[in-house]
Length: 358
Image 1 (cartoon, rainbow, N blue to C red):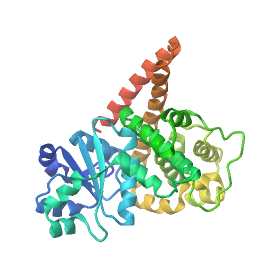
Image 2: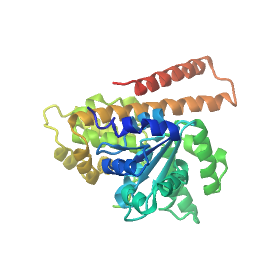
Image 3: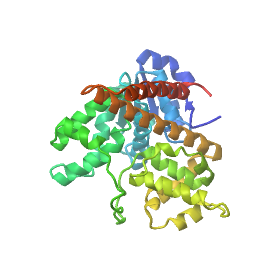
């Protein structure tokens, strides 16, 4: 049994999901029960953990439309953002993801009892599409009237948009980001494809503010390694670009663990060693406590493996997209043609591995 892969109420909800073409994900078991009692039967919930990539894969097999319905409080919005981040590398152009936030003080049970099931169904129909939620969330922290604010939005959106596996949706987001930033689509694509080298200058020191946004999957890998340092030996380092700040943090952490054969690695030792460094910025000490409570040791390994598969899919897709873009302007070399075919095979193989049952 792996709660990171199972969804509460799915067997009972399958018929309603097929009839509506929609699966609704709510926060708790009792929400599923209460909604079913009120005639809303196409709902499921994660088993006491955040939405994982495995959950997303399972949801995509059930319906073309996935609606995440969470409370409007801080915890609900945090859960929604986590669901978005864990969906990006698995999105498909023939699937529609959207988000509903209930009014403050309401949960699905109280909302349906106070307003009726038709009102709840209406919320689903008017849910915010994933792309809009992503941009609205990022724009909330910046001033889009200033060049600095628009630049900050571009910077924050980059690692998220580049994870998106659906080529059509990614293209639409490039267009929308360009409109918001007052740039051409080509300029945004060029900005996002250019590799920012940090080898020529040291990273800016931390100032106590919000750390530079990085791909959530990569960050959580570091957090899992901090909780179980033995996982470091299972990291596929080819997935990480050492020239980026986050990639450099991965290498630094792995090398410290590998070079300390006589040390007993514990999270406390690890934090003390990296206190004040770039690595510490990516470990998110406050989040580690909840992560330790969310997963037991076996579940951490399963989540660790899921995250590496998601990162590998993203990396292969980015390389494939680059070759596709180049082929539109010039002929690929024989070596590039071979790599193109190899990437397609590897992507298909990874997707089959992800979708196959354990």
